[in-house]
Every structure is written in structure tokens, then in C-alpha cells.
Figure 1 (tube, rainbow, N blue to C red):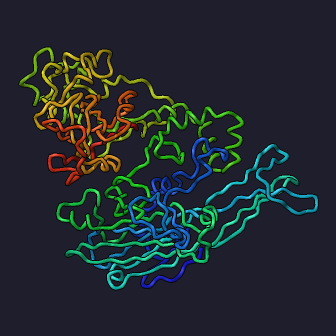
Figure 2 (figure 1 turned 60 degrees about the vertical axis):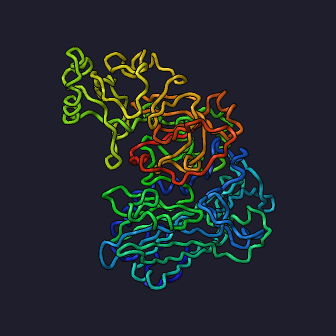
Figure 3 (figure 1 turned 135 degrees about the vertical axis):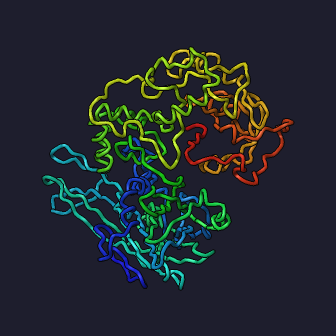
Length: 591
């Protein structure tokens, strides 16, 4: 790749970058979040069953695609929005940062894929070659014609002071190229061709208050000359695919746009992000970095440590995809291997996966932490006035005081199940020995069910024992919300928390009917609801597909709102009474 000059800055070539500058804190952080960035880069690259013949692999490249402007706007201007799945010719990122010392610098790493055509050509008797869809060599290997992609990245370093005085624009180019790979024997060859892709990255900054600045990064496709009515496959060859940016800095600190501090809420709300959205990607004390991606993510996204490798479908469950991949026939696996080297790598990983690695894919509970002596003593002391002699001793952990399992704070994540295991099957350990459960009555939770359904821990078995859910009836249970009993048949208005995911935020202010009340094993409560204005609500109820919300995300409708009342948008996604910490994990319906 070739790069143009940067005024008052430095451009780094794509792999093995070396500018002669010291690494700097944020540059090291870029490497630490490579797993998440690569998951964005290859999301949807190739989907199960990883075969060329699969319909879902015939329409590819769905996220962060920046086409030539004359092609994407052939029928009118693009409509700005945060969704990165919409076709566009540019991305715009705006984020807030605090300047922590003089001489601060901004580092931006642009990452994308450049598509290339993998064409299989058969050798002819005259010494020439002709393109074919597939070709089998003498060793029995099948080669298929298919589109691939090459990862590209550019790093830009600019003093922050320069961005306050006119900004900086950097031209970026992915050169055209052709690679020829001879196949074994006289069968033929594989030719990979790439067309030139040009773009520009513009960085500007504006001072808002004191040491707070708004940083703007705009990436645009700069290709011209493409026929506006060219087929999409042809336009893709001149496009940046899966485009995203990593933004870091030396001497700066970034502000969350999802959960900004109160004094910067208005400034965060004023940031305009188009076809991408920035989130904090660093984990303290690693350093400041933002990931602006065409896929909406939460702050501090992570790849699950139990995942042994990318399946290019982060919205799916690894265990399910792995099981289904294992069940592919030999013929299907041969086609997948011939489709793309990344598909072959997935098959190799699945076919050789050790049992203990596969077992970890079944899931992990991250809200539990082992009880410490301090927390156990504190809980026992708090429960002592209500304890009976018989309840004061734990049958499962006689050497430790009884304790209630604490919730892990967002700033100190617990070690995931299996993350620290050594290879080989681990010996069985009684869960009671790892996580002692209080046998004294626990304090009344803020959303307690009526007295008829209450039972002390001494009367009800712990959750992993038979009979633990006896007496619980989701369809008849109720829970208090703002002093109002809410259960099956109650009508509510949805008020998702600020930390809720994007799908739930879209439902803010909608009215719904409660179908059931569910008690989780960690002691939390969730209510299953169906939307009033969903034409398929009866069907969802019939086969049990619901949306799930916590009690503090619901507003009881008293008196009941008529069914034909239109849903009104919420004035805010979450009021003060709905404020929660980022440590709470939200569940959405149907997932």
C-alpha cells in the first residue's frame, strides 16, 4: 500500500509498522484489542456451513462497506444513520476526550478488507489457461473460484494541537495486484486479482470546555470513474470492506458516549456518528483507546475467553456452530475446505478440538465470585439477628461462615469459568464447596414476590438440587414494581436502562403485556413480555418467544391502558430510578 504525506503527522505502513517513533501507550493497547478488532474485521466474512454453494455465502460483505460515491449515490444521496450495515461512501466518528498533559498526540489506525477475486484456471493443450468454476488436481484436492479478502491497515499519528488548527487529511491507497499460484501437476493455476482502492482520512478537533475536545475522524472512499450502474460485485472490488478505526492517544483520556459523566452528557449527545459508532475498548490501566465499528458494541467489548477461534458469526453461539460444523458430511467438508482457507481452518479446529475445550463452550456464569472471608463474615453478621441455631451452620461448607454470592463489579471482572484451567479434564468439585450459599434467611430483595411465594434458603434447596423450583409458577408469580404487583396479564411500559443493548433501546416507551415472571439462579428476576403493537404477539406467546426485562425497566400502567392506545416514545431511555451499573448483564428476547 502507498500512503501520502501527513501534515504535522506520521503515517505508518500497513503491517510491521515502523515510524521511528517510540511505541507509546496507546499503540500497545491497539495490539491488546486485536482479537475484538479482528472479530469486527471478519464478521460475516463466511457463514456456516462455510460452503460456496450456500445461499448466505453468495451475498457477502454486509458491514462497514464504503463504496465509490458515484455508485452508491446513483439513485440519490445516502441517508446518514448509525447503522454500519447500510451502504455508504464514508464513515464519520465523533468522540470526546480530555487532554491530560501538554504535547498530547492522537493515533488513528484505519483497518479494512480489500476484496480479491480468486479465479481457478484450467491448463489447455495449447499451453494457455481458461477460467473454470472448479478444478480437481491429481492429488484429489478440489479448488473453487471464490472471492477472498486481504486485510489492510494504516496508522496515523498527529499532534493534537495541529488538529485544533485546520486538521489533517491523509490519502490512503490499496494498490492493484495479481498473484499466480501454480497447482500441482498439469492441472492449472489459481489467479488472485485485486483492483486499486483509494480513500482519505480527515482528522479535526474542536475545544468544547476547558480540557475537553471533540475529535472527528472521517473516512471516505476516493475512487472515481466507476460506472454508476455497475453490478454490486464490481463495485465491491473498489470498496473498503468492514471498515473500522482504532483511536488512541498519548496524554489523552476518552469519554464514554454510552454512559458519559453527568457534566458531559450534553456534549456526548451532540456527537454525530454516521455508519459507525465509537465505544471505549481499553481495560484500565492498559491505556486510552476507542474502537469505532460498523457493528454496535458495548463499552469494553471482549471476545469470550472460552472461544477457541473465530467462526465469523459473533451473533451466534459458538457451541451450536461447533456442533453443527461437526455434523457436516464429508462431501460438505470437502467443499468448505475448497471454498476458502479460513473455512478450512475452522474445520481443522473443530475436528481436533479436545473434549475439555469443547466443554467450556457450554457457557460460563460471570456474575459469581468465590466467597472471601471478609464478605462471608459481613453477610453473617448482617443476618445474625434473624438466624436460628439450626440455620446458623452450613451443611455444605462447615469450615466457612454462610454467605450470599456477591455480584462482580464492572471494574473488577471475575475470572471466567475455564479461563485459568490447565489442559486435561479437571477433577469434579462439588459446587457447594466453591460457592457456599447462605442457609440463613436473606434480606428482602427490592422486588420481592408476595408472601405466599416466599421461602427462606433453609426451607428451599439450593438451585442445583432437585426441588429447588418447587412452588414457583412463572405465570402466576407477581413482583412489586413501584409498589404495584405485576405479573401475568399486567400491562407495562418499557423503560430500558442506559446500559441496555441497542435492540432494547429501540423499544423504549412501547407498551407491552407481561406473560410470566422468572426467578434466575443468581437471585435476580426477569419478566417476559410481548409488545402490544406486535402483530405476531399471539404467535410469540404460543411458542414462548418473549422479550425479557428487569422489574426496574418496567413502568406499570394503572389503570390499564386500552389495547388500541398507541405507544409513546419515552422522554429518556432510563430515569434516575433505572440507573444501574455496567456490571449488570441484560437479556433480550429470543436470544
